[in-house]
Image 1 (cartoon, rainbow, N blue to C red):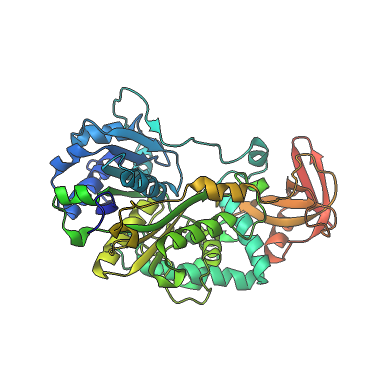
Image 2: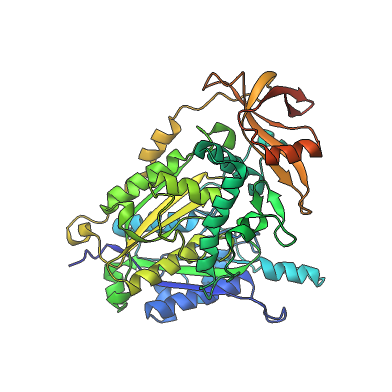
Length: 510
């Protein structure tokens, strides 16, 4: 008999709205409400069953649209007693919610939780183009309760050097990984194009995908009139597409409550293993730029909890805002570059769509796949910030082995793994570098016209012989010829001189 306090996912729903007349277009809350109703229908329960919700948690939209979305959703659903929360913006947050509240259900603190998230950025953009400012605000007595602290992702020093938009930051990891692989620039460009071509193929078969179009490796890898350079080496087709109208919702409860609501057991999906951990927070603090100790620890913890290995995963969805997010997670989880399994169940953020709550959609898709292949296992990874925050979940329709014991489902305190990661040694950092130096990693940022306009360097003082030499951030001189050269020749490890130029550090290659 499965333990009554075993957490179980009973209902999943999502919505995608494309090409709707602006007069009938849905707001983010409309889309959220649609997803919730889809989840209740999926669970086989009436909307009145939501009156028993203990928690409503909403993932913050990339563009906030109302004072307290959880309160507004509660009002629409006719719920009165739920605790209301909003998460910070973060791709990891949907899986974090699953992990956190599964533990609270197992410990008897709550019985029934609803998670939801939505974006309507495409509609918002179209409204602005028509001369109308979107007004989706709904009255609320107070701001949302924050489920965790919202910590700035970058320091002022990092921002001053262009380390702020994600399109400028992830290329720093990509180029470091390329060098670590030993790939040439051309080889690596085609490799990441091939990786994401497989994602686009999955999206092409998904009715909820924003771009259900299969693209070739070359089409994704190479700059064209339709595929501009965004931040070298990334083209537009390699970037998460945030301008979508999408939503998702999840209903999590206990086995006992699921029985009381008469949810059919064939709908039940269990979280077998999970973990959460953050990287050393700021980009300049990282151990290196080609690996992720946090993903490694999270993977080890989640697989250990589930009693499974990565080879046991029939279905996988790796967070895919940019190619390097997939590559590093794949490597840290022990998945071969030649593995023939798809690494997405949705089509990924550039093709399925990059709503801030994307991972909720991934969990929806994963649950549906596992219900159709009972007894198989699926892995969902989630990433927030700049490869900063990581959450992971392992799912199956089979109940966890510990569910048959008198011991409730147990999750290891994330602080255990966080302490290990925080203790890792990283190079000392200086905001005022001066002298000979080498490039540790770099990128060349571009404007919307695709023209390179900013060289961003993370470097080390000295000649490269000291693995713990002080690290710095700098920009290269505004020189289009140099920018073009840095995109065709590998400058990782290149020597030069760094100095402070007013408020900005300048690195000049030899």
